[in-house]
Length: 312
Image 1: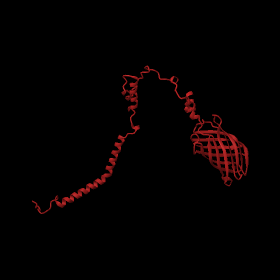
Image 2 (image 1 turned 120 degrees about the vertical axis):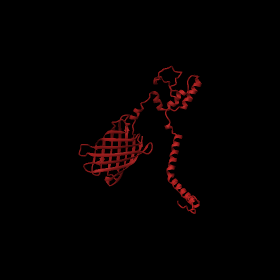
Image 3 (image 1 turned 180 degrees about the horizontal axis):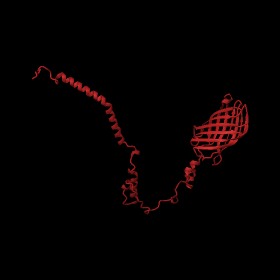
Image 4 (image 1 turned 90 degrees about the vertical axis):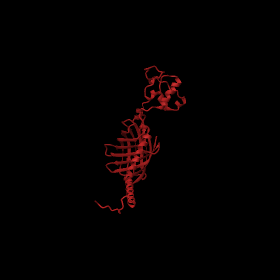
């Protein structure tokens, strides 16, 4: 038999119990601090899910929900016309409601049988679009296809001629004057250096082979052009091809690349490569730039232009 030490202190007495409680509480505090981030995250997740179900957006509603406006209209019609036996719940179940004013299985009205719209004559006279629609419903898709996606432009630019000792100059011109509703346009321009080292002028006819409303278009170029530098001078038929890219319609922005030749096939032939870009600043005013490379058997010249265009 073991001898018991009557004088020893039990574990759950005085100071030992206090120490145990302190250690236990410190452990609990440590566990709570470790679990707090995940617990907070869980609380936030539950809150978000609750808000999502409480405040559902309109696009989350099922298609089968009832239109209360339609029910109100049906009930008002029942009261005004004295129609019996039509239950507003038919609208909620999306069942077709028969119209007592029409016989059963009556055909739908055709455009020729529609009642003319009673409009104010002054309103009709002041609206060309309304007059057109009253005469005949237009083909909007065809109009978009054939309505020009670019506009006639009057240009005034400052030009720099790097190959002529960085001479400054002036460039004026008019671009794409439409001939009726066809794909034919007329253009003309004049360029000069202030020191007299460069001069060029001419006029062109362009025929856009694709519909004028196209985003991408191609046009053969035929015209007459005169070129003059300190090394050579040439003039004659101007022929080439123009590629037009229109990312934004009605002159808002476009990009054009033109490759052409002056006096092609002759000893004075000169090749012209022109890259043009325009960006609208307002409804009728546009920023325009030109980069042109002029190659002949005598030398290669260049021109850089930046200016403004007025849209018609």
